Length: 231
Image (cartoon, rainbow, N blue to C red; front, top):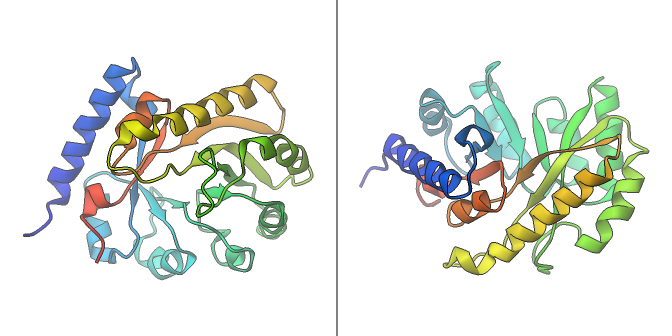
């Protein structure tokens, strides 16, 4: 059966609106990122034609392969997967936002490469609220020391946090992860650190984005819900 990207987007849009209503938020507060991992250019073009201009990729190689075929002034590329330091140079001039800053060695490399391209790169700090060993990200108690060190890197602009919740068929079971990330987000914001801006809270995927929105997410990363299951 052929996947209808248009009807999938409409269904997701309806769920976003309802989640915003339940949490007394404006729909405009939440941005939908289309996660295009493994999807060919022609499929992504269909989503772009339907108004999705924020494209999320997990792998550097896929950004490189798709960038020239898809790039327009309107398109925003998001690096949402784990980023190896030796791959930074390939995407530093291509991405709008890196969601997965999780260690100082990566911060140092991002700063070095951004300086060379004469731009300040926007990043999110990845946090591991659930302390899953299989997931990347800083534990909550590591955040403050990390933030102090970020001041050394003027070509990095921290714009918020990203969290990946454990997979659970019942999204309600992982609400605590989103709530914990939002609490940390607000805690950092209150500190009013002049080189840190808590603007984006990236959390929520196909199976749990409604709960994430209810708990304060303003960037949701949806792939399967738009394009169907990956092969």
